[in-house]
Length: 257
Ligand code: HXC
Image 1 (tube, rainbow, N blue to C red):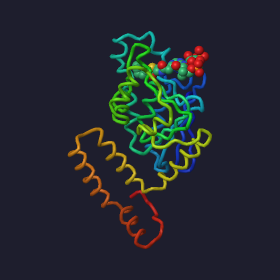
Image 2: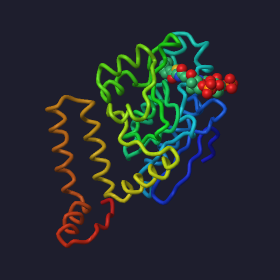
Image 3: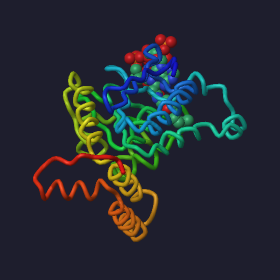
Image 4: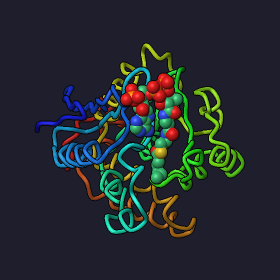
């Protein structure tokens, strides 16, 4: 497919998507959203692709939703178009994906990073929800996902003051899975993605679905949901193969069946 604001390439079973609006620090406008929806849907539908990495530039993962595109909109415009609702198509991706964050991840940029299954951050990463300084608030799930990730105290402070969290604090607070030197961020993210891509694919989808279940339902429902998905995996060839391979002390050979 032909994209204008993102770059998409395949490296074996890993899809790499790079936000590419350097002139606007990768601010997320409607074109970026449209293209991301298409690229993520293509990834999800492609049996040969098993993990995806979303990244930006060294200076900015993304500096937010595009302020210039939003500035003149009124309530009726926002409500009528259900502005930002398209992001739910990105979060509906069933297969795993990682955000590799270097530089600024602010506002919508931070929110998109938090939509990923997990974040790997360069040591130069900066996360923030500065929307309050523009007279608005997070609008792409940030108030919910940030609070779930780092707890009320830090989430509230960040949303009320707009202060940024650096990579070290973000790791300590549980916002990011791992911090690596900025220069090796993409290599590390692609290596981790390749590791996930080599896993039995149905178990990966199930693991993602059940971890996400924590946030979408109560504990008792979540635990039952986990158990049912776990039971279901015993109907797959890869479960038979994985457990046989362990007993026979050899690597598993996954068919995705
Ligand atoms: C549109 C943006 C932008 C954005 C940067 N640019 N962020 N354009 N939307 N969110 C543009 C600038 O206007 C500028 O364009 C170019 O990118 C380079 O940015 P500079 O500001 O010159 O760079 P620098 O001085 O290095 O500062 C970097 C920065 C700053 C600290 C990240 O750009 C900044 O504060 N950006 C806004 C961050 C923010 O408020 N994000 C939240 C957005 S609201 P020109 O043409 O001048 O070169 C949001 C809402 C979500 O995400 C939901 C609520 C509705």
